[in-house]
Length: 265
Length: 253
Ligand SMILES: Nc1ncnc2c1ncn2[C@@H]1O[C@H](COP(=O)(O)OP(=O)(O)O)[C@@H](O)[C@H]1O
Ligand SMILES: [Mg+2]
Image (cartoon, rainbow over all chains, first blue to last red; front, side, top):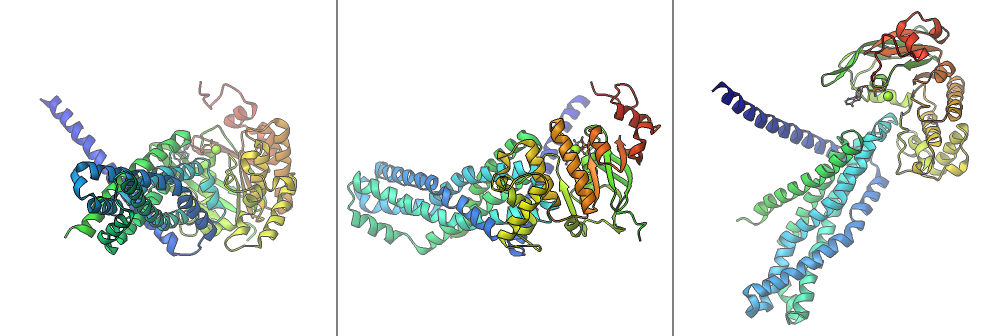
């Protein structure tokens, strides 16, 4: 009897420990995010670092984000057509592709691709700077590593992601357009007209806001995991993996919340 | 005033989890003096330096710099007079060699024009025996000895009052190690700086040190002038200096 109890207690203790650990790391992440925001708002500012990160996060992600959106938009058009909208394809395909891409798939797929591409590389970069004492060296050179490393990345992530999301939306709609006009026989004028008829300014704004939030998440989580990286190559590997997993899950959760906020009436 | 030590540690303790690394370190370094800390790997030598710089906050004890108590609040203010050569170099691998050396002069308070900062960096590189042709390389393109020199140039670039050298010769061949030892000695003397060096290389100790402190099991076991290390009368120092397998320091096998 007592042995059963101990096993039960151990089980509960295990759950308790896990919950406490989760609370502690959530608290640490929130604190880190606040420090990053303070670093963005309070001088000194490191403008060149910011521009470099804009290039890295925004510009160099364009091919990945563009290709993802193009194929997704195209596949979406085929599915909608195949799924019974054959008879009013003229209006159903453009409108559903536009709304699906702009409201959900554009920002979410863009966020997930950038989390894999940029979030991982931020975590690996900052993690190896931690492991090789470069972050300590920054401090000894009278430079606050949060301001110098984290703030420019977080600002760049938050500003670059809406732009990438806009590109993702546009190319996704274009993917639907190509498939719709070349494979499904929809007249190109009608396709464009239908897209414009169904899409509202609110859809576009929600898309860009989602992009900004996802960009913030990707950069903060990538920096956080790297900054708190364990020792050695294994520490960096662990930080990189955690950055991708954590930011992907947070993106999906945040997407749900934002959809609630924007579209549930 | 002249009696105030440049650096004074009293009862500094630091644990990581259940691992008690420092258990009450007492140490003073006079102005312009060169102190070398010796001791086995993992005895907390680097942790001691990081406590003084403010990278690690001790659990207990006091650290005074120029008679001023170090607190988490004022630690940043001391950094302008510190220079540090890290154990692994810790060069910024996203920047060129000269940008590393001139780091303090490219941003913040002491900012110079880019061309001037570059000239200054090349001057410092020359001081540590590197030509201007290394200035535009990246740290990854340098050999270990050259990286150490660049780290040295970066540490002395802003003419610090206090310099820390963490294992400056570890991983270098004996000839390069000797060159670095000479450089450190010359630089410390010509700048009149106070220096703390970590090493387990006895050649370095004899070259660099005015005084020597032996750290073991979290406390300073012995401290004295470098001339005395061969007849210190301390069993720890005796074993370490002579590299003996038997003695109070248990060798891990
Ligand atoms: N940030 C840290 N977190 C956990 N343990 C650490 C940390 N820094 C150092 N240690 C531990 O403290 C001990 C002393 O480290 P260190 O001062 O680097 O030794 P050394 O005398 O070789 O320089 C080691 O056992 C090391 O594992
Ligand atoms: Mg060390």
